[in-house]
Length: 476
Image 1 (cartoon, rainbow, N blue to C red):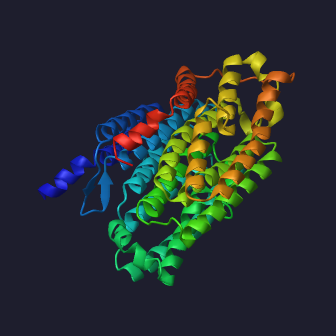
Image 2: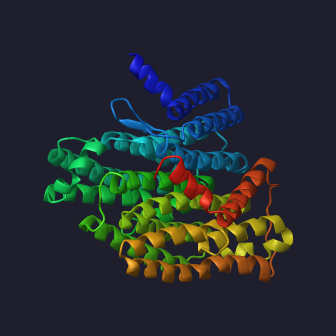
Image 3: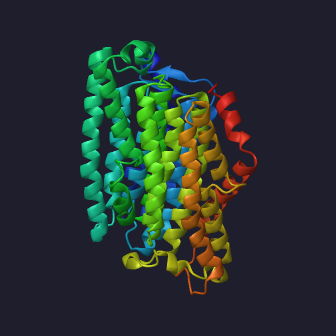
């Protein structure tokens, strides 16, 4: 009993956030249509969980009979998820009030989805990964269709649910095959036996099914078809959350399983992941050029960025892991910042979501235009912003793994992406228009987005900050 109490205490980042989710639910039920209370409760819960995560950044400790690990890698990932959730909640309040759909349960669902993400990063067992993915996914299915009176939201929620359930089938069957061949679902034990298991065809089929399931969560080609429609139909701040927090959680699992557990370098799994990465970069960037809706453009951009990060997974080396962890830190802030500004511009009935609606924004709202330009430059990978070094690290990992061709494809497709990112900047600064934000942007939302932009600049100038944490705190 004492051991379990100790485990609960050491798992305080996850436990505290789960407790705050329940408290927020109670507050919402007792508050009688006062979602502002739920808003503040959720923010307090995230700050508390982040404090516990920072305190446990040191050595990783196995908990609950090696089912979970707390500290080190999982704590670092927790900070990424919590940062995404915090920004999403801050941006959502005014957005939902403007759409007249401000509800307290919205914040409860975000917190519970974040708990699922934290379970995924902390998992030392395939069954915990499954529980984390399902907790996150179920919350996101509901959040995608949160604005029930909106037809596109209902469509996106149903599409996400049906395809997500299909991906879950692959995940469970893959776990079953791995359990049948390895005799365990514990990642550490599977890792020790991987050299022998890698010659077992059933095990490799099971691992391939895990790739399918995880690729769906990161929206990698050919498992990407849900992303543009779901991002377009969902509330904009939830699109931001799905494209950052949920994607980061899926990549955290990718790293845990395929780099930290399996030694996939030089195996067929590495080749499969490299092909998926290359196709994702090509399809995502080429298709994004044809988009006129900004949310759909960012959806295809997200597919391309999944390809960039999968290059690090395919490399299967230390440089790949470091690169992905850096990339995720930068990607969360630049993508949620871009979606945040779109949520400020957006009006009822999906108006002001096209490129042309941003013409002349710099003359009407110079600060907002400058922030959006920073996010676009970083997404394009232009120095000195953090997005440049994210791509540099994952491409360097591919080169060191003998996949120079993959790095070349990454660089060429990044050049393609410059066109559609800078297209928006050109419209804001060099085209006449009357782009305007109808509602006044709240001070907390403006401060949050400004901090995200500042983070991208600082991380671009001093990329070693994250790399040193990875190497120093939890011995990557």
